[in-house]
Length: 398
Ligand code: AMP
Image 1 (cartoon, helix red, strand yellow):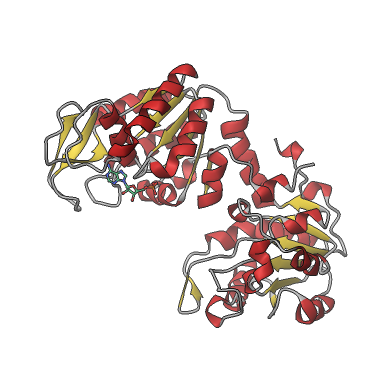
Image 2 (spheres, helix red, strand yellow):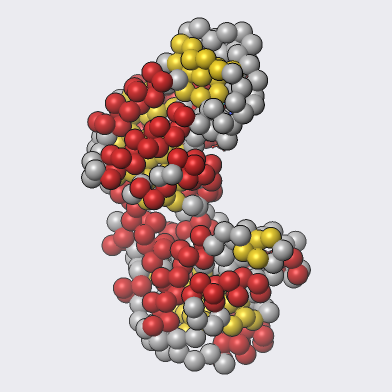
């Protein structure tokens, strides 16, 4: 899979000005980074280029500035955080193009690291404006992209520039592409997908693509209710998109054509209040009481899904199977997360998961580190799971 992409193995960086696109869109409070996961992910690539004698020029966006510089969205405090994690000085330039950037780069020695100000301070970034792309490209000899999480956007610093300079995948990007390739492009079968979350309306493309690719599709969470309702089952006051019953039936019909087994819950934990620790009972899905809400899958469903995971060689997962943020309704998601983790540790399973809520759920279950790969890229991971080409990734193909 990665053989189809240019990586750092193909690049000669010594003495070169290397424009390295990273994702430094980290959460901040009062000028301090509160979660450094994204910084940690790109340290390998920064160190490797620096050790090989390249000049590392970091390109990144931050927040959603309204087309001009503003203090609140400056990357300046992030430079200090990167330096701290890297244990190496990181210089900062107050603009990502023009005189200011050029001067800062001219002052660099081989192996130095410099962070350029927020690319989104220029309108040309999100417009992928050729003039802005040229301004960026002028600053470097080659381009390395280590920001998979920004690769679903065709912006100047994620896509445009890759057509102007020799372009390569950084190590974090490479790891992500390798893991995702193993999960959906050339997976060991049987391949089981687990999809949960609130609504099917936000995941129609996802379900459509998975039904065509996987051997079994496990559906849980609020979206399962829409499928149950489409089969004529009572859903009480559960979250349910009744207007999408026809769509849900079409997905099931397609699954039959592609010989993809669909596993819906057979029982659910039902409560009468959407609240933590609300009293709840396990009901069969043919007997959901009128005012009740299905807030988690039931134990029978958990056991059926575990059995399906036992048959699988590969599992890909997006979305919690219940309202896991509410104490009392996390058990279905957590039990399955732990089961996937155990099978993975035992060498029986390749497991890939991604998406914001999913990562939070795996962390809650304490098993995020036991999966083969966990992608922290929200939008990009979903678009990849939907089978869409990511512009920033496509631009790195050989
Ligand atoms: P998504 O962003 O589509 O992955 O949805 C995640 C959200 O779905 C989480 O906040 C869950 O609490 C919610 N969710 C999952 N299952 C249910 C359910 N059965 N009823 C209501 N909300 C749910």
